Picture 1 (tube, one colour):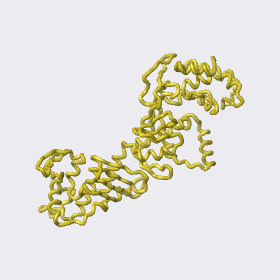
Picture 2 (cartoon, one colour):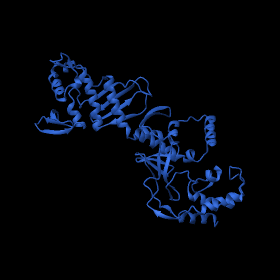
Picture 3 (cartoon, helix red, strand yellow):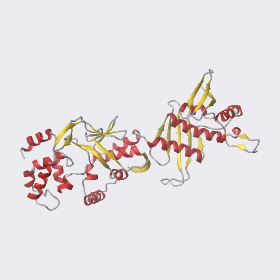
Picture 4 (cartoon, helix red, strand yellow):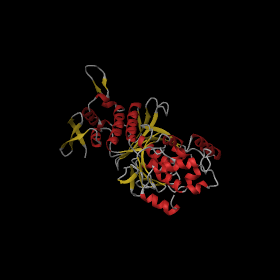
Length: 415
């Protein structure tokens, strides 16, 4: 039902409907915005485009921005030229976008300009009150207009207003239609209705949080023992050095990603290969990159990998033992603490980041002392008593959940 604005306040419109009813609506709502429209018909499609901003660090002289509005579902789509992503808008954000197009429509209709008797100049359409603009447009309906709302060319100021809507809509979102095609190309990651599942172990939700897929008992260290605990809300407390929004190249296409989208993708990247970012040393990092280059493997996710490298861990729940660690994930790892070779880490049932990995190493001491390959990468012999004394001494002060000890004893016998 159409309505006319008859008054209001700084935050509301007082509107009168065709049936004579009067109501107060928020200026910031979609309804409030539609009440302001005099040139744009919200029941018909809207297509508008223009160049926003004068300069952008990513795109040079301005940014091409396009808007498409579907009136059947009252949804808009904003696309940025040269980028593969798009933002869908509804509600108040759609209202702001429509008002930007409305400003363009009014500015191109010279019949809506008014004459100021005192100054002798035409009044700018933006300085007119909403009610006056409504009145002017309604009174000029019979004069006809060649304005086509499905082919609107926006001026730079109006295109910039539309770009502000784009940035605002983008800032807090994780757009499934953008992130899902990206993470689905990562081996070991499955896309579901609730988020990305990594190696059947972690679920990264669309609000960029992460949880263990399986509901397991969790424990925390209390003195020299462990006690059952309710654990932490998230499996790994992660934060990254993200931007409010930024342009990233992934698989050859450019995407504008919100901070939450950056965190979502970086969390998937990190949890897929945590040792790549925390456990290997700088030499191995260089070797890894050299192997990739020699094999001709393109670094499709280089921009996201850079964000993953900034990971800061506040806590983590080991997915195999259930032990909660309220510190960074690399505080005590076998490779950095005892210079254990990577092949040994790969042989372990439990994680090299967890007390249980250290316990397993101690339980398998005899096996590794007699191994044919070097157990330590610092030159220590496999049978180095000092090294094993250090491992066993540390293990005694790193308690594990009871089930871990029961399993290790059943597999390897007593230490």
